[in-house]
Length: 205
Image (cartoon, rainbow, N blue to C red; front, side, top):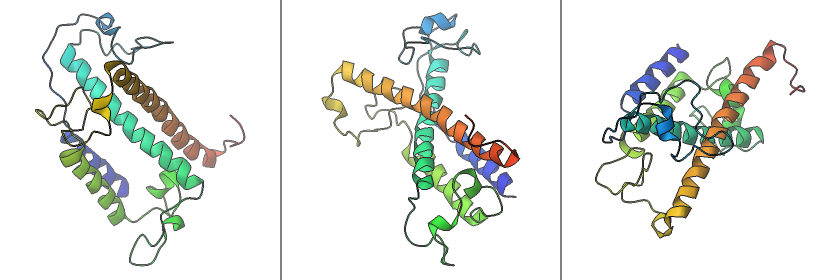
């Protein structure tokens, strides 16, 4: 039941996920994107599945939008994993019954399993994510956003406008790299958590 609720709510939220629209420019092969941000040493442009073959600029922007969003989510997820596993939890109770935040397990077990948070709590989490998708974490046209994944929307700055173009490109490349590393990192943590109960020795690499 809980898994079905999770899947349906994620699908509903994804349906509202915005994609930045861009003018179409014909591209006949992935080589047309060899100089884009993120195609950097040591791999350069790495597209083993050929997703960019025949892609136009709109298709590339959509893929980049998804990559940035997944990277940001993964960075938060990885940070949450290592923080809670280090013993840091929010103070107080998570529900009216008085259950504390640290009374629930970490990682995947907090969402799925015999000791996971109640279904009502999971629904609240997914609903909050849906609200962020629809109303906050979106690219609003006409607000001065500079690139795909720029969610400042005219009211968030933190000194970005004071940076020169080279510094901006550097920070965007750092975000891409950190997001890619976090996607692999959180996937590794989740897989490791699930295979240890199957008999895998956690002391092995």
